[in-house]
Length: 85
Image (cartoon, rainbow, N blue to C red; front, side):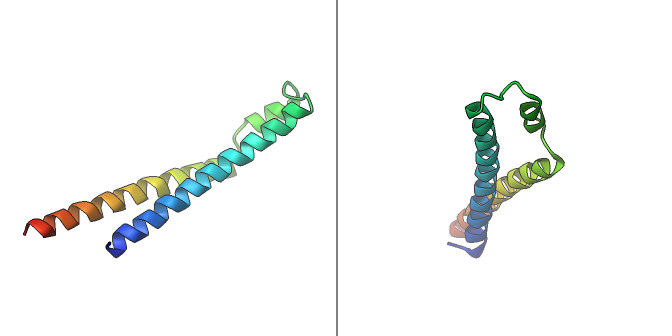
């Protein structure tokens, strides 16, 4: 495996973990409000809105996932091209 492939795999894994962490955090907040029977309260409406920080984390995670996939695919294509020559 090339260094590019390994680095792409690490970036992909990091982005996936960031995305899962963001989802799990929002899910637990919602479940907490549901347990308290507050899902129709102003607190639930406030949690339903996406904060700028969460949006930055979401876009960062998606960018890392995309970058990791591109790096891994590019590494694989480069390896196939050098193997044919």
